[in-house]
Length: 558
Image (cartoon, rainbow, N blue to C red):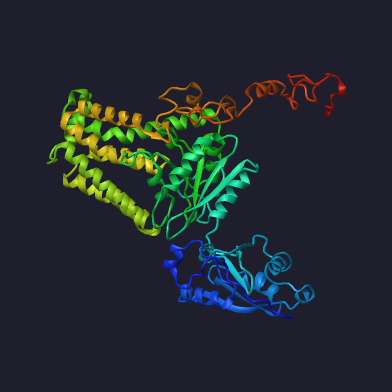
């Protein structure tokens, strides 16, 4: 058989390395396997884990396979074995070029997600991502197969969002696993995932997840526009994206919520929000976000509404308590001691006797010490961190009181404030409140209760000015919305929460058919009533049996 002469692709073939590859993103591979071998060997061959191997397809056609051995485990079994099997298909049909490409793709290769690509930029990017690439002599395109197999940790309970009642699984670092955890809960074709790559060097995959038909398309478009504006070498975590796409970059309050829980991400998508999942990060971003979301947990919806309403109210009081309690203590002690009852004032004065510092300095020193102790506890190994926190609180606090540096009442105030900050479910929101405590304490030590009120007014005015993708930060309280207020301080029954948040402008408003539920609830029957057991008549809502005679099925021991 006479072989046809090889013709080069019309686009010039790159003979250099990375710099020219970036300058010529549309350059294509060569028809000659040896030229492709030389290019890849010069570009990637210095890495010891890079595999570049020659072989023959069906025993006669030169070919080349390339992949990273530490990122794939199936290249030998699923790709090399079928291609190297000697067959007679080529001799019978005299296949070359594109015809040979179609036969190899459709008849020989096992992976179902294979594709053909001619551009060097796409081919090299695929190899770096863990794919296996095959070049065959005389074919103008390379075969790319998704064979990435990277070690990952098992799915475990989220460490920062633990619940008593609810799912125990959380996100991990693998993007594909995180998407599968959400798709497992959203088995609907309306669940859409759009993946883009951000980072000029890392090329990190970012998945934009939403439910079509519920989310407002303008929100999805705005999220995509903000992501396209990001120009950075690498994205290591979802926190990088959060800092780029949030509205106010100097505010201490977080405008985007993060979560490790797939069920929480799905619940927010059902409300009409967008979820961002970053490859390599176990934290998904929820946007847009309002302030009320930071003291709510997924457990608020898995328990009865009376119980969780009480717990949520206690959580909100602890949040406010952790912000203003030290400032109130300093203001009352320094400027308005007449507000303290006489017996308590005597006890406070006795405890402060001999303390050389004013109350504002005393509280600031204790707050700074507590922040340092908290940071040290987080950074130390888990086996040592718990012991250090106990030693720091008990030993150091008691020693400071005994030495006369601080008063016992100050230690109690700081301890209660710290406990209140721990009751805030969201770490970034609690961190913002911890930061705002210090200017409030300084204002209280300078101007008393007037300073505290001025500080609180400034904080409220700031939160009123914040927006998250156009949504007011204090929604649904300001601007007021009665339907949204059913799920703020307290939580109404689930069948009362029949509307999605109006500030999200969802395409589909209703979530629960309240009238139909109440109509069906009236037909509930007490079929096991001990007074009149039996199966009730159709439409009998009292649960009474059809008759009270001996046919009711009740037997007597007499």
